[in-house]
Amino acid sequence: MEPHHIREIVFTDEQIRTRVDQLVHEMADDCRSENMVMIGILRGSFMFLADLVRDFYDHDYHPRIDFITLESYGGGTESSGTVRITKDFSVDVHDADVLLIDDILDTGRTLTYAKNHAKARGARSIKTCTLLDKPSRRIVPIEADYVGFTIDDFFVVGYGLDYDSYYRELPYLAKVTFEE
Image (cartoon, rainbow, N blue to C red; front, side):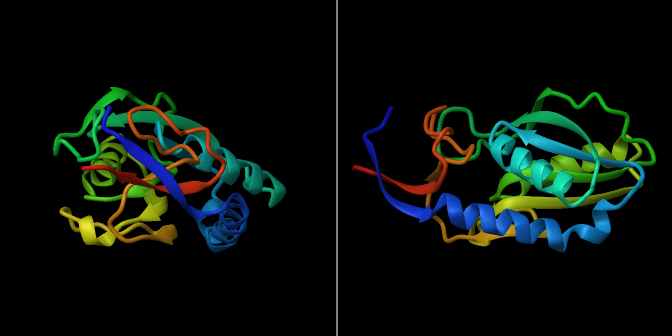
């Protein structure tokens, strides 16, 4: 593991909670489907998805929930460029309105892969929601339908996001600085 430090909180747990509630209000029309399926892209989205689902319940939305595990980073801080499924979703999405939940939209490869996969499985419609958007890193031309926060090009951990499987448990998002 490279020497690194977590010194700066980028978004507090309170800021995240407020933004999650705002996102649920923004998504209201898309989430009233009788056949709604929320699919969390693991591992980074698990806290974000859990908070969205709890807030959906408070607003009387009742989607089915599943997960897909896609990998493109391994243990580093740079995408490998290749996305692969390590755990597929098991809920039937044929003719469903799918809402894909991801932690961060970076290069765009992972979210594009997930959208194409849901489309190939027969989803009626596909919307995307990401906690973070890092547009300066985009390689594949894709934009999320709903974005929690837009950030510059720096590495963040916490609230489900990790560095080499550490820091997912932090209730806030923090910038990681690496020593050279």
